[in-house]
Length: 313
Image (tube, rainbow, N blue to C red; front, side, top):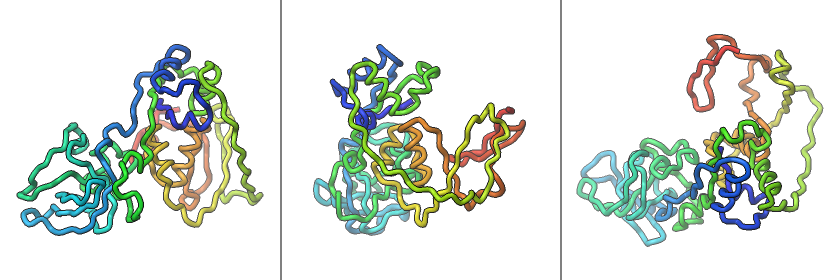
């Protein structure tokens, strides 16, 4: 399980805010902290760049010469990204940055000539910076697309993305019997009980008003021992919009992949307070929603688009 140091601080104030010391206290009192990860550590020499101009590489059909505005002035970058465009904001790794070559082997960038043209850095895909959870579409021959805004150009990439967190990796076996710790609120409560933190004043939120119209489908619980309670509501959204960057960063710290705003909101709430949630597109629901154990040989396609066979019962 992954617990975000910044997320915990939404709820509590630590007496000593050093993540390493917090990890030591949690290990001594509650559960083993297997790793203390400095999020965005490999982004130290990366910034937000803007592609000012582009031209075809004279010696390679699939490569492009990009002039990129950065925090170190304008740079000439050779790139093979298929989604490049003028005015695009990109994740740029400077010379000396550490990147994952093709998402696998760690390497340090050096000045290099690619097919006879000098390249002064690298326009990166998500997997090359360990950001595939944050940018699931920016893989393969697609680079990270940070939009077209004039704001943030030259900013350190980890600051721009909000990746300034420290993540505590908790041994799952240590808390298998502690369902109250399956969330950030749960670990915040534990830190208060341990005496290493105090509660912050709880913010007040207004409750939404729900119409009393019946759902367009029925909820049928066929095994109340397996599912003691199931609740559902219908939320109508004209435009699902885009998931805010802060939410993507929080989800990435908990090892969630951003999918779309409704799904990301449910995963965010589940991770924060420990309430299991799931969102469905109501337009795609055919018939009713049934709760029951799986039958032998049944298969489903999960959110990662992989077909899996379910165990019987």
